[in-house]
Length: 529
Image 1: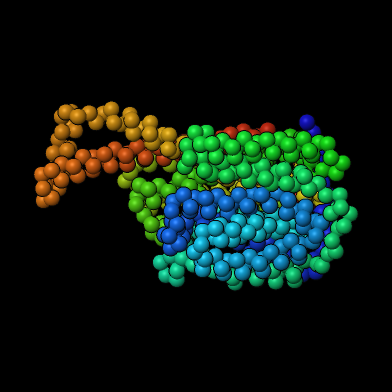
Image 2: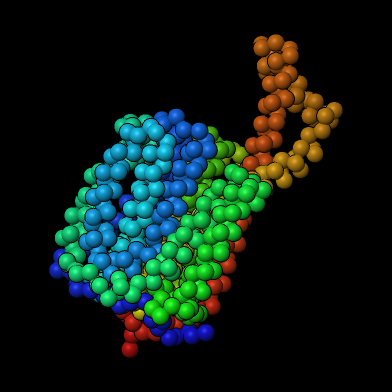
């Protein structure tokens, strides 16, 4: 494999430099944050949305799957579309349509119409992050690249930790509808910034006429089907469901077809040679492992507070807002400084080590842990989010040709969205299986007739004696069963944190195997001759 060779693939994606770079950076900020905020708010607020719209659990689950699958379908091809049609057409116009659909969704009650609007909503949302990434390479002066990529990268940690508080505020104070209606103001502002910050570009007719439409459809459809199968797998018992099996098999078949297509067409859209550089391939693996180890921040810690500590999102939200989001104000500029002046791999090692340490803290939890006990862990998450994704992206870009960013952007989106969903599905399955195992093992020590068990049941029955003898005994047994389940869930979360530790260690091993990048725009000042 090539190691220090810059990989080129895809059409030239550079364009005219923006005369108003501050608006271009503003478009990157709004587009990247809007996409992550909306995805996070929908995920956390889904129970409230389901209740307000009188949806069943199954209907809500498929609504969520459709909204994200449509993002995954469109996201890999957006960089190519922006190169072919121009950023104003691909990002500006969809932003305005997105605002209108966001206004309509809370007003709809017919499920089929609601599903259709959510699919279109997801398709439009899927254009924002890839298109804003291309703004950086296509229209910004090189001196703006690092801070702009930092904005692009840090959106993940910021939205993960502030979204919990925002959902609580909307649901409790202004109405769940504002989970959507906020976009009626933000999306038009995004369109304005795109209009002011990016130059007018004609349609690249040669690129459109020779487009690899089959490759784009194969990858988008294949990844969307795989995601849908993963997202529904836990709920429908994985391969025990014909629907899940068909989605996973069909998605895998189409994805294999994509790679075959890219190897034989005259002008491939995202040739797999992008993955043939050891450094780029390992960087993409590190992105996947980052999404998996960061589950301790995005999933395990907040879900433990909901499941075990019985807290609403608004009750735990301030923990993540104060101890995860606010430190980023200092940590992100520090990360940029270290990357600009020192070895980017050292910055990445610090970030991944912080995630490993946070996971180790999580292995010490008990059912008594409350918000305050999570403060050291959340501070480590803040350090990890600030020092991890940005250097990973810089590492990958340092070994690619930014002027030909379409193929690289396609694979970045596959790892960004696909990796996150693989992680969520994997962790959900892991927690469910481990809870069942621990529940069985604990149950073996709660045998009927055991002296300790009899004593505890007597105490619990006495607590409910005012409800009558028969009901008191039933409630005592139910309470004991609940205690066993609580401990089984706690042990399962400990196992989940152990899993994130091993993901962090695997990522550190991959970082150690990444070689030196060729000199370029991201080379630290300490390494320039």
